[in-house]
Image (tube, rainbow, N blue to C red; front, side, top):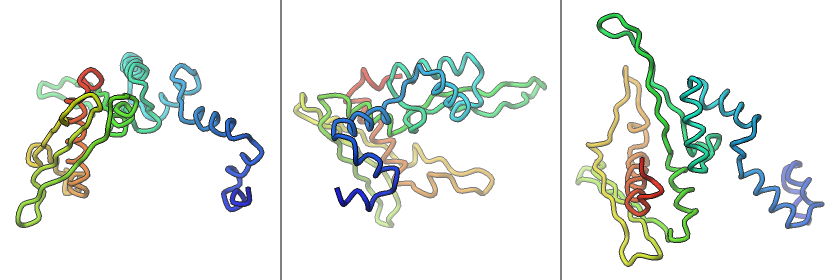
Length: 193
């Protein structure tokens, strides 16, 4: 147990617990009770501040149905900005529920059939990103599910001279898209909608 004293104090507090107790505590920390009033309030006050009551209820329904954790960036509530239409009417922003790549990977990992994934990107002769390909392997299938996505179809430039995430990390962003597409092909019942 000497190695415990090199760890931060909060972790050292666990040295008096049994291994089973430590595992149970870790599982409790990783499991988010989406029915807890305190957790729901925290989600409402942090990741879904812009949601009206109906939108928030729909967001929580989707989080519960998928078992994804909004506080771990597995699922997001996004609302576009409202605007004034040409005829002067105020138009409310539209909501979106987005599942991030972490959410896709969590859901895939829950499936006993999931057997890993490969991702690679292709570049032209000048080193410019052209495409990314992801292969998802299932234990119950003889061939992988393959998705190739083209940079030109997904690239999103920044606005007002600002760089977008696509400008800063194009390979990472395109590979995420390829992984999401391949996971949808491999597990259509889990990733539709």
